[in-house]
Length: 549
Image (cartoon, rainbow, N blue to C red; front, side, top):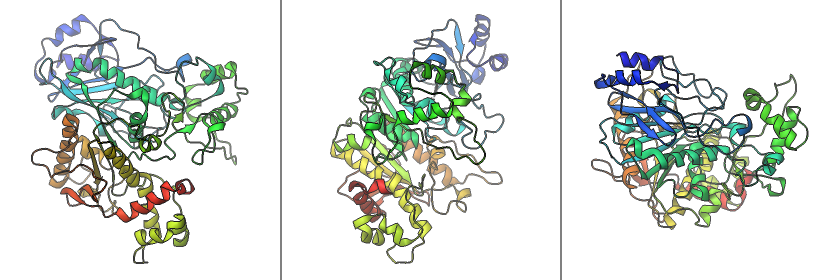
């Protein structure tokens, strides 16, 4: 316990001296420190707990602050001695996202621009020279929030199943996606705009260089992510700069069609119906809102001199003044993002690799489709309004709010997942498509529409916790074990199937089947009850009607 107390007394990122390492050698059991790991920037000391070794707060790039703000991630300065890796590093700059974490949950420090960290979990029992499958988690949060340090996405349970789990941070909001004329002219050889994606690629490059030191196989890396993390998976699949950095991919509720989280044109000469305002124009307007005129290097210097909070929040809201609000989204920069995932998939320019993807039963994460009457709703589908009526309101007695919610789910998640699955299958890739329809027992009254956006994550990570006054049911725990087994099997072999699990067939566009995690806790491949809805949504989408929603 001496070692445990000394470890806790160290500040995150501190270097452990020889005296502490000497004490570590006397530890045993859960109090023993794992072997020191050497990565390309120095040595790391993690912690062992309940048979799992974790290394947290490992910098994979220099802090993108000052003159490095809105620059590609730069190399980490090597350190001497042994860096203590027992605590998470800071989250990237963001407002509070999601519920506050309870005391004692090992939460990350307050958000900071110094945030480019990875975390690694592996089984303590892994032998020297092991080559375990590697899974790299890309968090969601609309590119505005989230981090790799959420208790909900701890890698401990994956490590228990023989996986090396890596979670990453990446820049968010205006720090992650930003364009400005002086930036475009500065260092023209550098990639511009998509700093969040540059961070993700830098983290994957770090994994390729270093993961063998943790017992991971750099030749067997699976990326997986949810929501904006799922969008990131599709963007990385379509990006020439990410080729060779991973070998399998899982997109959870990540869309894939062109929409608000895909690719905004850099300049005004490239605007399209989804993005009437270019990224550079947004950058110019932000500068003006902060009292910075011009688009030259002096203006850029003033932007870089703004505080982190000023970049994050912009000018304080004025009473009675409604300031324009533009979402920060990926940018068509011509190097990293050369096209959208939808464009790449239609042209079969995606890599040929195993893909698993899907969405949840009530996965509406937006409100792009709106209507105040049924007639207005059906009119959204243009010449296919009759098919929409037959699909969404076959008996004529449907509830409009429910229809709108279902259409947003189909529009944003379910139909794009089917589109991407079919595109990869057409190229010969093994593809496994799912729908997650199970809701934890204690939450069924609150979630009568079904599993919400993100509702699968705790099941997949094995981090389910009981709500106050309730317990986890045997079904909850069984579904979690089943889901995690499928994810781990896929990471090992590119096929989620395994002994004792219901058969999950490969996606075949000519066969109307989807693998469903059923509400009753069972699972299996069934005819897709949404087929008529997804068919009419596909017709409206591919006719160009999508931009009108």
